[in-house]
Length: 113
Image 1 (spheres, rainbow, N blue to C red):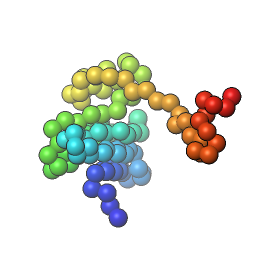
Image 2 (image 1 turned 45 degrees about the vertical axis):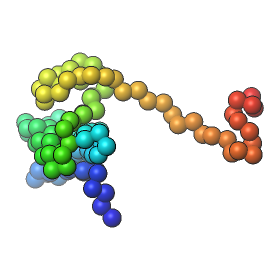
Image 3 (image 1 turned 135 degrees about the vertical axis):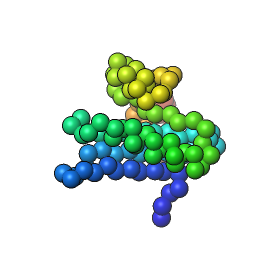
Image 4 (image 1 turned 135 degrees about the horizontal axis):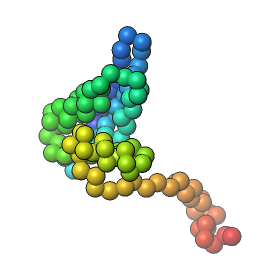
């Protein structure tokens, strides 16, 4: 079954897949979050522009008012992408592993060294 809150895009040329994008619709926040956008560096100009435009159009269809874009890994590249594609760099994303919780009958992890 298709999930209407997820958009997956693939870009092909005559040689095969050259890029993809994945976006989530956060309905309660009227927001499109583009959490993946990856393009082969050798791809023709405009591929990222096309992916972003498709996400924008999809957001319009669902009454979203803002698009967030997960920035590339380094600050220099993130700033360049923000400037080129019309985004404002507003935060950094952090991550950590999910901690495995102990079963209730084993007590809390803090109780056991």
